[in-house]
Length: 113
Image 1 (cartoon, rainbow, N blue to C red):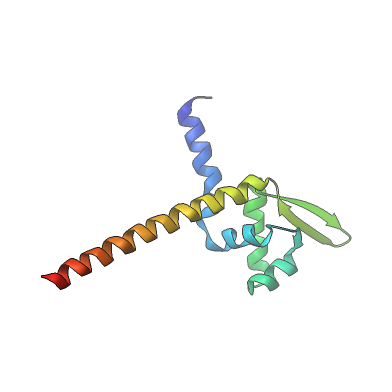
Image 2: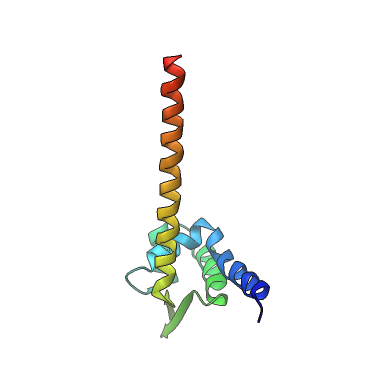
C-alpha cells in the first residue's frame, strides 16, 4: 500500500468525526459502555438518531458491541480514539485563543488611533 492510499484510508476513517453527535457519543462512552437508550437519554436525542450514528461508527470500527439479552451495549474500540478527540479539541482551543488574542490586540490598536 502506498502513501496516497494510506492518506485516503486515513481521511475515510476520520470522516466519522465530522459530526458533532458522533463526537458527543465518543465522550459519552469515555468511561463506560452504554446501550442506545442510555446514550440517547444522556444526549437528549431520539434513539433512531443515535442508532444511525452508532451504525456509522461501528462500520468504521470506532465502537464495539456486546449483546446482553435484547440490549446491545457499545464501547469505544480503542481508547486512543478518545485521546485523538481530546488532542484535536486542544488544538481547536489553542487556535481559538490565538484568534481571540489577535482580535483583542487589534481592538486595542484601533482604540489607540
